[in-house]
Structure formats: structure tokens, C-alpha cells
Length: 216
Image 1 (cartoon, rainbow, N blue to C red):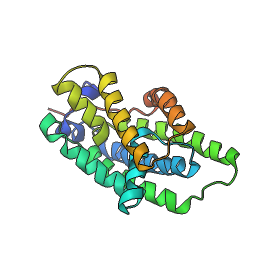
Image 2 (cartoon, one colour; image 1 turned 30 degrees about the horizontal axis):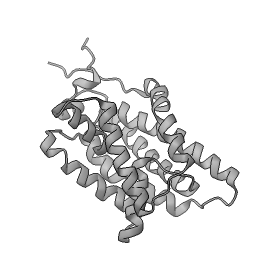
Image 3 (cartoon, rainbow, N blue to C red; image 1 turned 180 degrees about the vertical axis):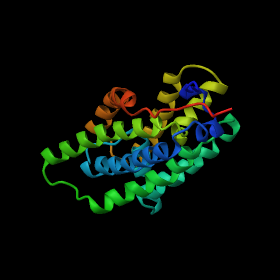
Image 4 (cartoon, rainbow, N blue to C red; image 1 turned 90 degrees about the vertical axis):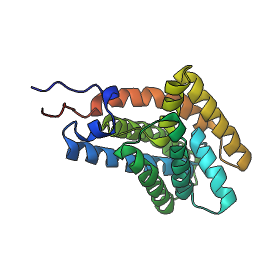
């Protein structure tokens, strides 16, 4: 019987050769669509967004693009930033750039902003928990990191220093820029920062895709 891959060992080609590809592709796209949809939930809750979405919303309000279009354009530019870091995208990386933005715009279009603060809070909490599940789904498919996560992974690998430092530097930078541009910062921003790590950690073991080495 073939020995399983460790997730960290998977390069772009190995990701596709690691077995169970139809099931993993389905999990990837379910995760990406859910991720975009839960981003829309947080936008419509209007109680604060995660740092990158504060940036996306702030830019969208200034350049005349939709929120999802800014998500796509930003993801593409961040992906270009991988080149000097020698990061290699997977199928999931490219899909992440496109699918999340489309799903976010769809969610914003069909979801109404609640009038009651109770429903705003419910939408915010559902968005954060669902976002954590969505992240675990697409990460657990082992088909490539998202462009934004790949940025700090590449910086850690090529320059050094800690994951925590690079993530903090990047996310504080985009949060400040987004806030200056008019993105929504609030209780949801703080709650997301506190809760998203533990939520992803809770769901990830439950949705990890089974992998195997290719047959010799």
C-alpha cells in the first residue's frame, strides 16, 4: 500500500498526482464558493471585516469596481508577488483568485443587509464560523494555498523570521490602507482576528482529504 503524503510535501504536480482528485476538486470548489459567500455575509452584516476585506472594500469604494472584482484583481497582483519569492501556485491557487471574488459578488447581490442589529450579529457570527469552515475545506483539499497566504509563506521561506511576524505586518498594512480608503472596521474585525485561527484548526482535521503517493 502506498504511503500517504504529508501535506507540506506536495508540490504543484504532486498535488494532482496525490489521488482522490475528483473528491478533492469538489471539496476545493465548495470551500472557495463558501469562502466568498461568507465574505459577503460579513460585508452585509456591516459590523467589521477581516483585514484583507477592509482593504478590498476600501479600494472598491474608490475605483468603481465591485467588491468581488477587487478581490480578483488583488489576488492576481498578489500572485505576481510570488515570482521573486519563487512560490509555485497550484490549481487551488488559481481557482482561489477567481472563484472567491465571483461568489462574494453573488452573495452581496442576493443578500439583503439586515435592519435589526440582532440579525446583523447573527450574520456576522455565521460569516466568521462559515469562513473558518470554508478555509479548512480548501486548505484540506491540498491543491495549493491562496495567493494571500502564499505571500507570507514565501516571505518566511526566502527571508526568514516568523510566520506570526509576516502575517501581522501584511495584515496590519492592508487593514490600515483599507481603513483610510473607507473600509469597514468594527467589532467583526476584532472577533474575526481572535476566532478565525481556532475555528479553522477545529474544522481542518474533520475535512482533511485523504492523499496517497502516485503508483510507481
